[in-house]
Amino acid sequence: MNADINKAIDVLDYAITHFPDDANIYDSKGEMLEEMGKKKEAKKYYQKALNKLEEMKDNYSEDEYKFYAKVFKENIERMGGK
Image: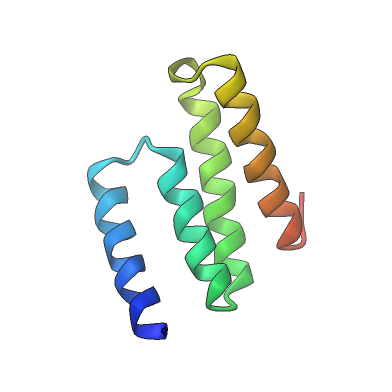
């Protein structure tokens, strides 16, 4: 399974390179890193997701923004921080 996760991370890195304004890609990479037990790195990507969401706030409906902000904040807190 670890090889599959590494492949998924490679795909997410490619996606981040080509779609750097998509907050959900950063969150997805955080999920993969969390799955690998790399909580510190996962937290970094969850925070990037939240930061990108803030930067791109105007591209989301109010409901979408609130939903993603809640998910990203919960992910950060689960990794041991605010």
